Length: 245
View 1 (cartoon, rainbow, N blue to C red):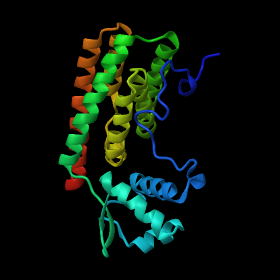
View 2 (view 1 turned 135 degrees about the vertical axis):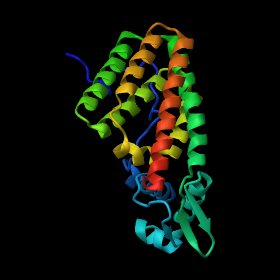
View 3 (view 1 turned 45 degrees about the vertical axis):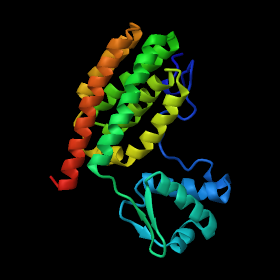
């Protein structure tokens, strides 16, 4: 029986992947300060508290049914991560991201994903890993044919997370997760604007073939071209959205 791609084994798994989707799983069992942090972050990343939203500390506490102390601690962490701006006696405002901010984030994120592809090619793939990546590419192509861009985007995140998880560098994986969170809102915003990702599908096949050939330089070169193009496309879509075009 063929194993589903989302359950196939990994040789070097990453606990939450390099492109994790925000989740409320387990939040209810957390200590108050952790719950406040994770729930607020979830609401911000998922757009339930959109950029520009301003709330008083007491309003945030009422929203989450928590006392002000854990809320205050959570807001300090979120401010350090650049998600909110806290102004004493004026409340907290969810920060927007400029195109310049996102361009810098993409530069770092893409450079690390390219390096992960090189490392994965150098290590090589086991048969189960090859089958999993192939299945994920098949799923993306199926979603493309049915114009299900949201589904394509979900599988695309798993695909790239898998390549990163196979690289064997846990510090690289952890850093990518941080930069993923910083671009998550922008990625979700452009899903409805994207064209059919036929070219991305073709590029994925080429990257995986280079990894299978254990050609680290070619895998890095192809992945860099892929990231450069998709980053430009994302910034252009965000620019159009901001300009109302």
